[in-house]
Image (cartoon, rainbow, N blue to C red):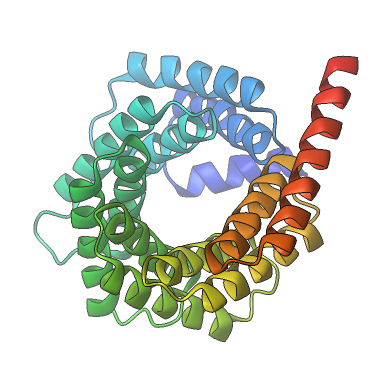
Length: 273
């Protein structure tokens, strides 16, 4: 039944059998990415990409979606250069397809992904440029409260943080957090990341009480989600640093030692594997 659903989906998209095969490989790659198997994800995405390159299909919306999917797999594997390359290819195709009309939600989301890739590669001016363009389209389309819009606000917050504009960093971080709260997402990795961004902004502005508050909220969320030890360990160190900034060396030591114990346990487990 699952195979039939997939076939039906791609028939509605009016693609050829060879395109269908490429999409099936990419779907498998994305499924592996979501389950944490980055090696398999990349293997299947590359198989899909090999078929795609041989087909010379021209500009089609499903192909733009395909290119963006390849970008996501490269992102999960930490290959920022390839992530950016394929996100830009997808954006170029979307823009060619919609050159005669107003920018769509597809273009807004693609701009956001390009901005995130630039952020990861350290090109903050471009990260800010593309995320602000995405936000402008989201607002023009009157999207309202939406997880992608909130994530885009976080991306703008991070870009301003890296550029040293802490006033705008805090403004966009709080706007994102308010939207996440209205969406009632509960425990979510994007919300936890946003909490850390807001904490960083408060730290830069010298408000260490707020810094501690938001870093503790992020830590508690990561722990409730049963997040990987790397995320929790880093968050413990952030909380330790926040207490140190406030001059509370007792709590700084407590959280620093918790981070050290977790890190030591993780390393010991890895050696046994």
